[in-house]
Image 1: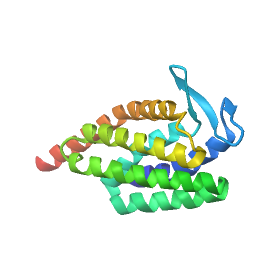
Image 2: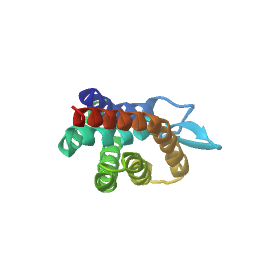
Image 3: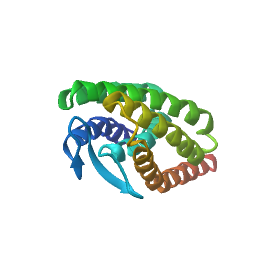
Image 4: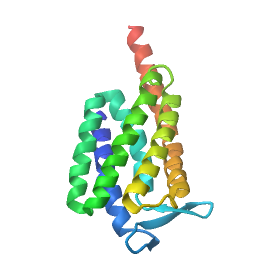
Amino acid sequence: MPYAILVAFLACIPAANWLIGNVGTRCIPEGPCIIPVGFGLMAPSGVLLIGLALVLRDLVQRWLGIGWVIGAIIAGAAISAMIAPPALVVASATAFLLSELADTAVYTPLAERRLMLAVALSSLVGLAIDGAVFLWLAFGSLALLPGQILGKAIMVAIAMPVIWWIRRREQSSEFNASTR
């Protein structure tokens, strides 16, 4: 399962970059394709995948280590370079790297004892940094930031029951191993 999560994490980056330029309810000239995310807010169409990526990143670090996270980010940026405009790739890679470093700084000290809290807080920090840096570098505007934050937060919220299930499964395995 760890390598499937790694592949999904890696795929989120180029898939999100492709969506931003190709799929949305409306495509802004010289800007992103956008989608509604709720409460009248719009966001670049890759927002949902990046929200998912923030959670997957935590699982990759938990199971495989930070080296795999950094490698996946670099590989994702390289794949993105083949399918998205260079300015979008640079903005995406920079935003993702900075947000993932912040995510790691929050996640790492909490993860062993408080996995749910670690994933929630680290994802919130990561999504805010990713949204602001990406929008500013890619489009020179933060106008879509509220929608960007909401869209990513929705994906994190959807993923939290899965994180809870994973944690329960790990605890059950640990208990079973210690009683043998």
